[in-house]
Amino acid sequence: MKLGLSPCPNDTFIFYAMLHGKVDCEGLEFTAEFQDVETLNEMAFVNELPLTKLSFHAGLHLQQKYLLLDSGAALGRGCGPLLIAKEFLNDEQLAQSLTGIPGNYTTAHLLLNLFYPIIEKKEVMVFSEIENSILKNKVKAGVIIHENRFTYEKKGLKKICDLGERWESETQTPIPLGGIFTRNDVPKKTHDAIERIIRRSVQYAWAHEEEVMQFVKLYSQEMEVEVMKQHINLYVNSFTESLGEEGHRAVFLLHKKWKELKQKKSTAA
Image (cartoon, rainbow, N blue to C red; front, side, top):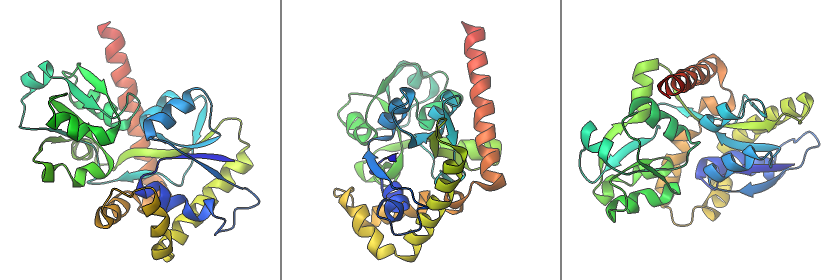
């Protein structure tokens, strides 16, 4: 079965064992399709992948086609997207500025729409290009995700808002960033088996960290090892093994806010 995942450290860390048959895969075999998360989102819109990582925002749009797994998700606290710029910009300045976003269907974009509806001028770009695009004045502000939260300050960029922190303070739940989904033609028996396999794969990764890190490094060669480890520690947590009640509540609230936003837009139109 083809598995869509990103080359980010948390994904390669989570899926190493199941991709290499290091855990009981219950007769299933998996091959990796490595893509940036927004590319995975777009591939899912045309039903290309039976099993894939998706931004939760994309998952909301695709709920008739894809079903969320209880394991493999990236939720957490203090790990959300950041709105940054060369200098602090007020709402009026942001409304007039071009802002770089890491994809239309990323959860980062949904959070930006929720908290900064004034920002209408946006340019979609690969997440890793956003910092440099701000520095080169291609965009005035940008929403960064993944490991860029560990690097933007070193480049002299300033945080305007931690969108994840704002979500946490308003909802009292962790921020749902990305989850693992099966296409709706995957049998329930297989869906449930994959949940168990991912859980085993995560447990294997923590028990064999040194071995797994060799695989992680293959896909993050430009990243410092310390940044890789920070990335993994932030995004691979108890919610990755199981969303649990708290994780499911966070996903439910994201769905609720998304629906409210859609209604506001249709009323305004």
